[in-house]
Length: 99
Image (cartoon, rainbow, N blue to C red; front, top):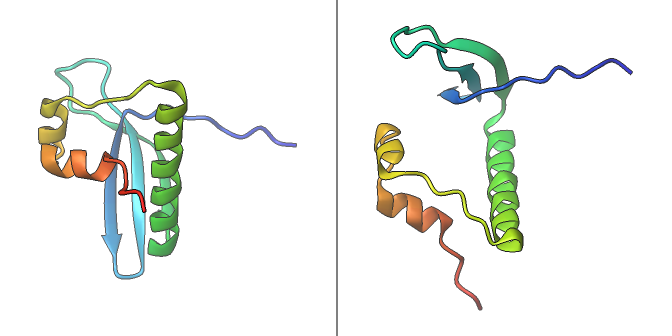
């Protein structure tokens, strides 16, 4: 079997059109003053695949946090930099209502 390449990414960019989505995984610069952001991997997929993957990732993260008792919060500064309101973030990660 051939070896599967592994990559590290601490940044991402999402671009989409009517027929699909592209996610560029990037690695930030080692020197804070440089602007170079290296694209380390590019994933192209359908919107259906992206939605299914997003749901599976959400469910997996929630299960890990629930099973370990550890959460992975993001600061208000990070959320603001990504144009995500704290209310939207909290609503997304809040437990679903029980029936």
